[in-house]
Length: 395
Figure (cartoon, one colour):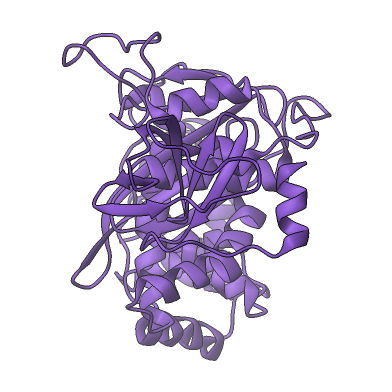
């Protein structure tokens, strides 16, 4: 029984006791009213209503009135049918966002209450005790988070979702699926951010081996001996900050919880099972809509991003490996033989130390100091350049 009905029944029983005591002169009107928790004037009104309609006259008439704001039955049934047919398993917030996009006018509370009454979703658990959290960065571009989440995003397929986001306002600058998180995916996320916004101040991540070298398990990271990614961040002048617990990455962890709740359902609704299609969906639909819903205004106006000023970002955000040129003027690199072409500047580079750059898209380049000796595809085949491009590269 609902609380309002229960209170009405309790009032009727108490009124019988109070009315009987008053008619038998055991209670005065003041004492009877006190028993009911009302004033004497209200008690006299109860007496008049009781004498006219009996105990039913004591029931609050507002309980039988239908609110003029109440949703029509057919609207509620349509809402329930939409959820049951295509969105079963979606949480209330996610479904309400979809419902509003389709022109719905009801509030989130209304939608959640309907779904809970139909037992499609369960009431949330208590949030627990209050904790003090780290304040957000005051300006966008002061601190960028990057993390990966391994999950079964589509049935039977486990991928890593790589997200690069801003600490100040939750904005996601890069978001994509890969088979496995690593140096290449980290470079790609930072590259997307730099191309969209410019240089940022600091980079916040876990202690994954592609971000940091850790001498002993559980110990502090080595800030002197750098990984390929750490070298690139130092070259760009971006400070790196290591997180030492999941709680320290709470902001990104909560975002991944939202993605794990929403993304599999949206991909299933769109009929996507392939990683290429999934990445296209992320870029074209999911990421813009997610940012529109979850971006929060920063504490201060302005931005900490700075222009790239012509920096060759692609040549920095890459793996750089030192090699020695062989007698055949070739460089051996991970099973590939990269042939250096002869040029008007030098006949050969035999026994010289060069650097092989491997970019996040799989392309390779060989550098002798600042001079590029050639570009190669993922199979190690030389990518020919026209004369105009060669002159620009030489300049």
